[in-house]
Length: 416
Image (cartoon, rainbow, N blue to C red; front, side, top):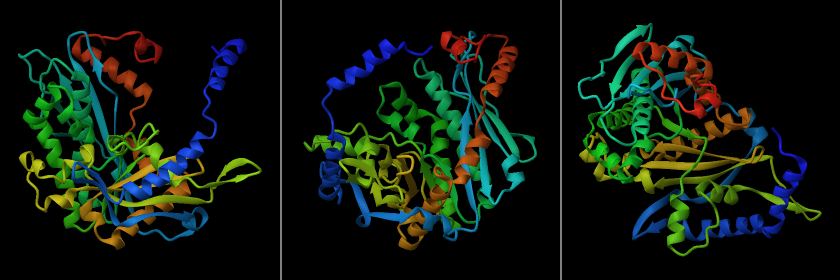
């Protein structure tokens, strides 16, 4: 139901009382001042949280020229994992199912048909253990059940993370040899959702320390980096939604005025270009703009490049080779920001760094959004609403129990 016009006007006019006209443009100048004065490098308690690779720069690339450029890599592969999201059943089971897939350009139908499926289950019934080993269920596909560690809190978050990261990392490792030139993950290069558990309450930090399942996930991502490094094939991640706040949080602790809600808003102000025409601001849309590359030791980025990681996983290379590096890309056509991430072992060489960057810029220019391999991987891995409903009914029959639903499940068509 739409709002009645009188109520719409009543709500809209509340904005008239907020005198913030022109502040966004002023924030743009503030962002550029912060960029020039605080990020080369950004310190916190005497440590470098953000360090430019090869100098602090902002650059632009013409969109039409990018679209006509030759590709930097003959082939590209993309990887993603989708899930049904955690479901709670009346018999106490909490379940999530993740489904990982890899895409390729040019297309490889056999690879596209291959899947890795992980069902993560949580129950506080100590008389049952539902865990299983890997088993094949069709040509090139495998599946297993992971029994989540028993905890009285965060059960849904735990099964979701275990399913998603186990499926993604296992699928990537199983298909390493099929990637000849470049692998791009849909999202960060490391399992940051789990790494953040170290600082959340009491239950999740304990789980991070004690769980063999968590240790396996961490090891999988380290092995992935090492295998690609040994084969001299670059590995990167394409982050479509940047939610981090570590940079602006650090700046605020220094007493710097940072009016932005998150790091992405800050970077968009740094990278957006425009001018006033007849008193009206017009954004320039002919170029993609991007930051220089940074080494990041902020928040969860710090883990894999630190000596702390030695407590959880063995590594072949020096710790700094696993550090997260990134650059930020701004597409003015849709006013969207993306982050390219890669372990430092792949970006320390300037030529390779530029090839990774240029390939992704070309892809964004052509697709007007995420690279094609990312869109394809997302489509292959996504578990749609109809499939989710069918799986829930199948689980209800198998468990001899009903979904422990609420009105939101009815509202969104997941339960009747």
